[in-house]
Image 1 (cartoon, rainbow, N blue to C red):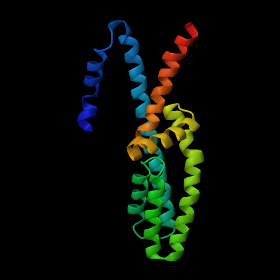
Image 2 (cartoon, rainbow, N blue to C red):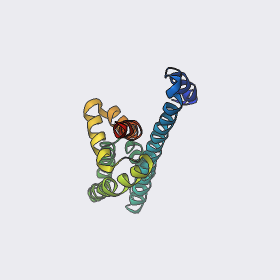
Image 3 (cartoon, rainbow, N blue to C red):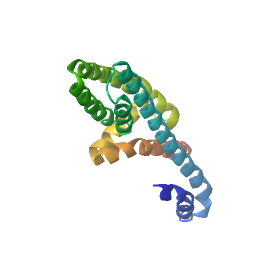
Image 4 (tube, rainbow, N blue to C red):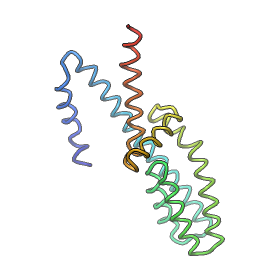
Length: 180
């Protein structure tokens, strides 16, 4: 991934040479906006995962769970996976909490159900609206569609692809429709 990111500028320049010279500057501007949207999506997703990990760590520390920091890291890492990651992390951490004590396991399960609702309906749409500029409904539909088609990889790629398609429609298709 680091090699790809290091050579991204070169790759972009190479592919831009395939575009006719008359359209190259416009294509480069749209490509830069798409890459900026993808960067915003990644940054937003990392921010949401950090929030999930931090709040989970605070809860697990207050609830006196063993290995609270490690369990919070599990939550933060699995939360990077769209749609199912938070649930996978919550099941794993609640299962570990049940091994420590049944009341702690129940408390974890309740906390994660409440937190996931807050994340899904408050945090995620607001962060993604600012970072990707895609409507929240489109975000959810794109993630579901991508996940259904290509599994976890599709869910990861769905929102940046939706942002790219929305940008192309807004910048290319709609102006052409307005001119004709």
